[in-house]
Figure (cartoon, rainbow, N blue to C red):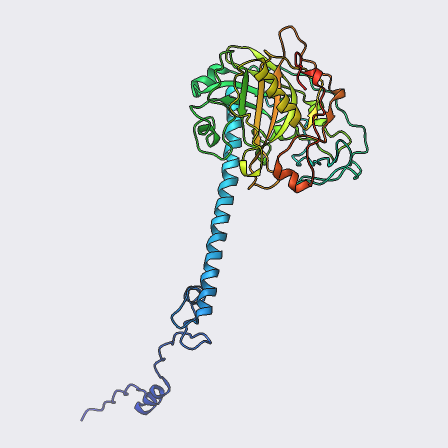
Length: 411
């Protein structure tokens, strides 16, 4: 019998041990959805917001009202933020469009000597030339000491040529009528004219919608040399663009020189496509009411022509009675006028008023120089009923030198 050895059997794990190991393993239970402390409400931020913000069936009547009010406030806030962003973007786009137009015209913005755009502060007299009373958000009192301590330079600036490229401007926009400039200020813009007084109120030179709009003339103006009163409109932009410069002719009663801005910038230049440059001497600035419910409405908007000398003289008298400053500029029938109108709301936006600056063109052979040294602040301009009710005052009659209206014999 042959000798052989049995092959050793492979060691296997003990069945009992394997079973023991299996006894230690249990399949994990499915995770339960976390619940909020309030029974039955899932802890999900969006679902929680919906429960908190929107009325639920189980909510009390008072809770439902609270949520509705909250939703309304959220919507109003979101719309306000959206509109603010739209305004800022539109203002920026309008400013860029104006810069683009300056580049197209080959017009250099030049040296700007204006102070920061801080609103002028004004007062209205409560007597016939003495005393004062605060009026509106821009007001102060005559008893306050002026802020300036250093000597104020009121030397008038000398005008420099505009030389706009009207061929390029007209090729881009045939509504181009001219270029307006006030030396040493941000007002250095193209002037256009639409078929009405609304189109360019909301559009830039290139036809794009914008809050800044474009400086435009009254649609009734002819621009053929026959206009007796050229009327221009522009927005009073918070960034200093468009007609914000016009607002600066408001007297600043916190200064020892309330009409400093006028004294430094007494003239306006307008260049036209025929190559002519027209210089206008500023002679008045008026706060005009536009709503009958607040008192007399000063109707300057459509006065592009005058029927007679009396018609002209009466218009000038109405302007001078209302002017917030007096100058050495004289006027006579036959003079061509320039009117610059912009929005300004010292009594709040619900009282729709305009700040309007008036000028007359330099006559043939006349020097464009203006003696601004005798310009004075008028503390008794003619206003309107609502304004007087605010300041508790009234108009005390004309204070301007009527000899400045040549040929005028009225009282």
